[in-house]
Image 1 (cartoon, rainbow, N blue to C red):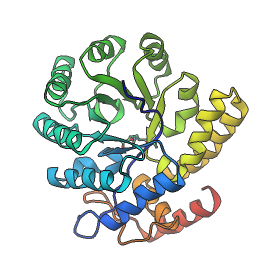
Image 2 (cartoon, protein in one colour; image 1 turned 30 degrees about the horizontal axis):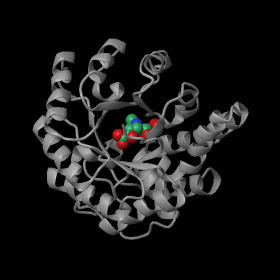
Image 3 (cartoon, rainbow, N blue to C red; image 1 turned 135 degrees about the vertical axis):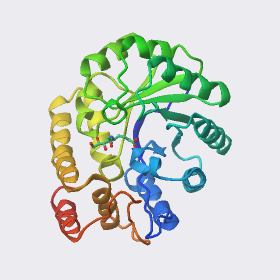
Image 4 (cartoon, rainbow, N blue to C red; image 1 turned 90 degrees about the vertical axis):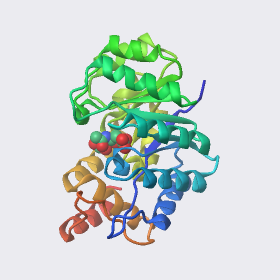
Length: 293
Ligand code: NAY
């Protein structure tokens, strides 16, 4: 099996006024993650990458750039899922040929899919793609809730090696960890990394690690060292930051913080219909950068 552990940033993608990828800026963000945040990996094509707003060929372009810039220095996970299973397969095969360590797929959303439909979706992807797959469970955005029994059925499928668990259900997290010691479990809510670490997740995948990766690593290490006071303090500092970022607009603020950290090539806009940053938000981002980062 693969050893994809630790802090994994959900990669942010900067766009220009026409909605095109700002490649130079994207390369800077990738370098910042590797060189400054010391991340163990990147999760490419997640919600954080505004992935559900872009065309298939642009998704491939982003997979290309992330691989080219990071070479073999860190783990790369390609999020390929969505509502179009044929696209998921095409993207999964594409990322696998590029050398991605694993693929990941969100549960299909918008329609209220039954668990049987969700399971077949994963079966179809793993049958067609020669790579390991990490389930992406985020019920707050997808409406797809799965319990222990459903996860057990999915983990029984060949090549499904893990789950990105973006939920505040620590009872389910404990049951999963206990029941599947060999499955890779990633914490998906950055503001809850400390409690997830206590339940011995293998790592964490999240948006704020693009700027807060060092504190996040500190949380994982402090829990491993049984220094709970230190871990709690680092989570408190992280949450002061995350709270302010969420209140100011998650993706625009994270992109602005990256610019203030020196990723300065070209526009760092969001892709429509997501709004780009306003003057007020810019001011607040500056304060956040000075006082909380
Ligand atoms: C991705 O890009 O798909 C993710 O990593 C999702 C994880 C993030 N969840 C959401 C809903 O955005 O990192 C978290 C989240 O941004 C963070 O915890 C702040 O709430």
